[in-house]
Length: 113
Image (cartoon, rainbow, N blue to C red; front, side):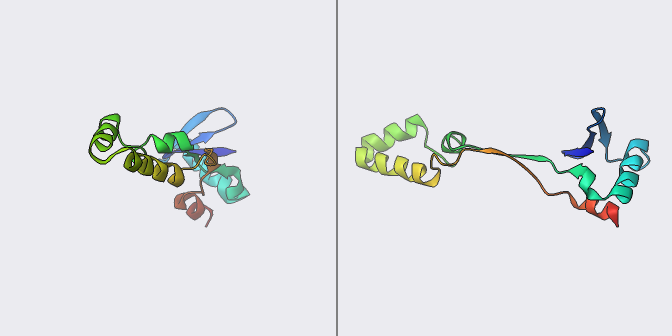
């Protein structure tokens, strides 16, 4: 069994990292294994989905404290509350994050053909 890690492949039996390099014997073995057993022996890369805290504090989330103070001073508490509520609505607490598996890259699928 193999796992895609970026542009490399990890062989799970021994943890070896296999570069996607023609001429590399481990890469050649990977391709031979795929041709013999199909793409089911390769798992896509991990995709980490952020949770609501990460999203709210990220670039599309809350404004900086300085910007919030400026809004509070110039436009009032209701405006600031509305802006913050919009962020909460965009990234609700139901977004809990997690890890999923990405589809296999095209070069793995092509290796089966």
